Image (cartoon, rainbow, N blue to C red; front, side):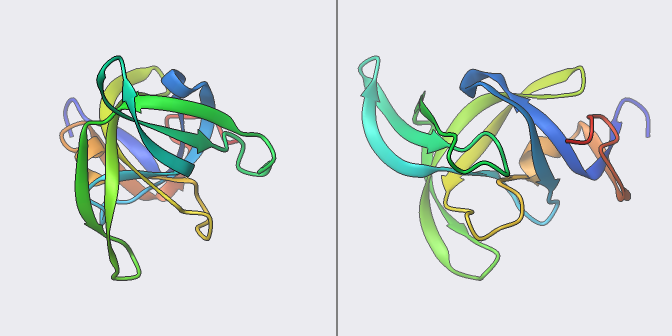
Length: 144
């Protein structure tokens, strides 16, 4: 277990590029890519390159608070969701912070309104960095 950090199956991360702090996420080793709940996704040009604009609800229990964000478009991928349906999703790269650790992750943008957590942290973001203790929560972060 050398050099890898232990995290719980629920953690709180910061996505500082979007002004989000202490966002509760479900750590999902069954998901390849991380996913984030957003609304009003629109493909745009960001600094002359393909990008996306979208709305984020930074507070899990306050859907009235909305932040309009933009990011360069990293990719468009076909993703199979937990209900077995496939959909095309925009993929962005962003900086994530968990406790004192910061790293870059890929995130697909989708509607997760019917899910308990607004974000899943998938295998790609975890690989080589963390071990997941499924019996624990908020190991590296504060409970929200």
